[in-house]
Image 1 (cartoon, rainbow, N blue to C red):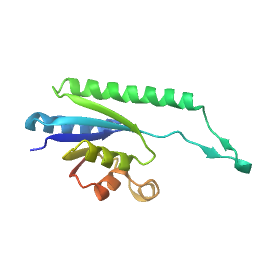
Image 2: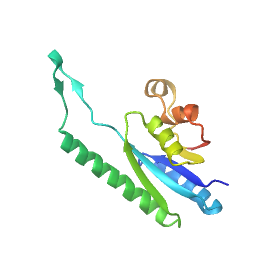
Image 3: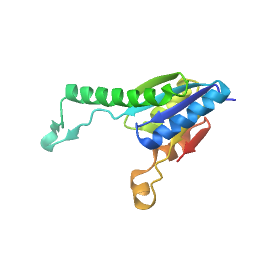
Image 4: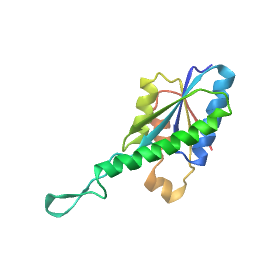
Length: 147
């Protein structure tokens, strides 16, 4: 059925459910699974008179992102180890996670994206938006959303 499944994750419990679902699909159909973690890019803030203020150094930022990425990778690997699924872990940095997800699905020739929806409603959904909604709207690959 599916040959290559992409699962974006932020390491949350809900996104781990998407990994479980993808692992089940992969086991039943012989698909391979790629898990993608999209880290935020280095933040900069403009101060007065045209100078820039940063909350931490680039080195500190890179170390923080590397630790977070390693933590997410460890959680994912522990989760799929019992499911007899080989997973390729990918990470990238982007301020627009939905774009990184869609680009990765296209570049890796995935034929399904399985992702979680955090189910925001009302004002928070309007203000924060939803990466899942953006992927659903713009992705040419089928998207399976789990809650």
